[in-house]
Image (cartoon, rainbow, N blue to C red; front, side):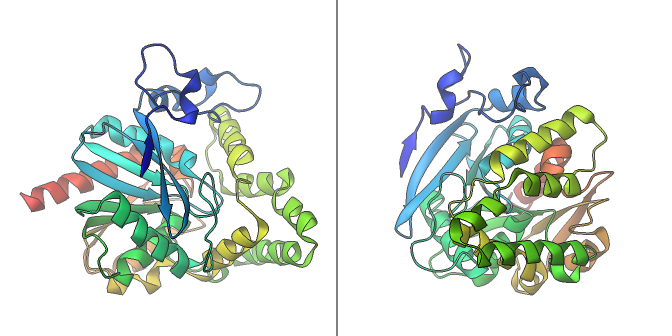
Length: 341
């Protein structure tokens, strides 16, 4: 593993900050000052570094947060079309609350700084196999917590359920806004069907044109507006700017289409019965992508799961209520620590 303690993001770090603790570009909307970017100060104060690994023969980019000497580890998987940047608000709040924790946030294959899979499909089994190998590389001695947000919740659950031989043992599983029912069967099935149609059109078009459609800023903005629930105008503008900046950071059309079809056709419920780890489900009161009633059903499918509900927010808890999520994760970690002792 090649660890860069002076990451590419840190060139603009203020004097006196720790290596790699500089503000990551992209946390201010175009035309706004960094001070107007929510969480920018907290993120900038969080020690961070880049690590590049080779997983299944291709480059995997991992952003590592927290004190390198911290004894506890979390590996946190991001959602569809995102990368590590999207989870930084949660991670920064969590590291502030639990300085004894390091958080590894990989870019999933084909997104952010990670190369697409050389062999295999960018579907749930493909991502789960990749994640199992990543865990072996990052935390070979085990005793880590695996976490996932949205699409990452499906991948995380599938990774644990697979019980890959020689994969390191985990302490627990955290699923934030877990996809409890497949999108085409959920309350947004009509919108999901339209989105599927757009992706099928993009697949039928010549590659350059199809990729342009998937990366079109109007498509990105429609998706962003559909998910935002906050009434805070500054926060809304920042969320839209984050989506504008990172939502199109996929490697190529094939990667995105494979991952998208996996995201709308799969959910956590199919993996839950096979999971015996202590599990935390963090749901949102107003999440119509992963609605609360389905989360209560999902909880009952696990052998050992606790459900925490963040009030008055939707699917984007990582942007709209990151401290509330971090608070629930902190409590879950405390429970694991107590059980171990």
